[in-house]
Image 1 (cartoon, rainbow, N blue to C red):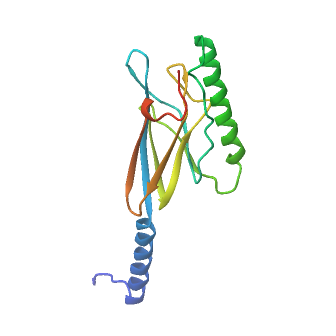
Image 2 (cartoon, rainbow, N blue to C red; image 1 turned 180 degrees about the horizontal axis):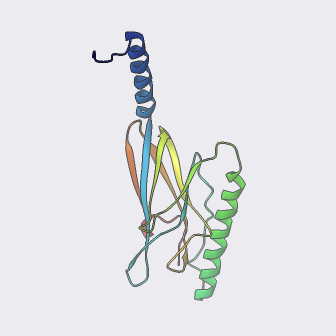
Image 3 (tube, rainbow, N blue to C red; image 1 turned 120 degrees about the vertical axis):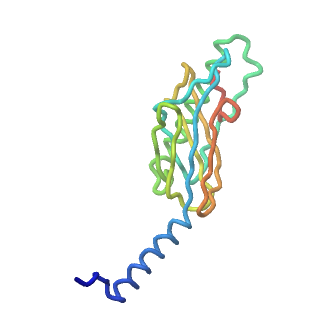
Length: 165
């Protein structure tokens, strides 16, 4: 019995297909991340089952004036109003063609992954109704994806788009 061999033409076609696939993957990148919030006691709570959006443009973040809030409920009311405005701004853009590249739901440890992302600037967005440890949370982080590279982002108290409390 003679070993089977593929005709040279078939081998050339397979080689070209593999080469074109690897070029396509090399022009894309990956974004990984983790969401967590430290509560007032300093305990880290992971953002499990949080919807994370990858967008092509930023969302307008409303300015909040909290220094003149005289009582805690007034501060909380202003924060809630800011979260609702951020969500409304996002919803206006969400339906536009090409605005949301992809969305994921975090795993129980707060991690998420976006694969095969085109090189360029993207925005990781988390908005209302996200709550962690009983607090509303919102993030918007710009990420520059390089071809063939994996980028990692931590979403936490240090980079919230709006205060959680």
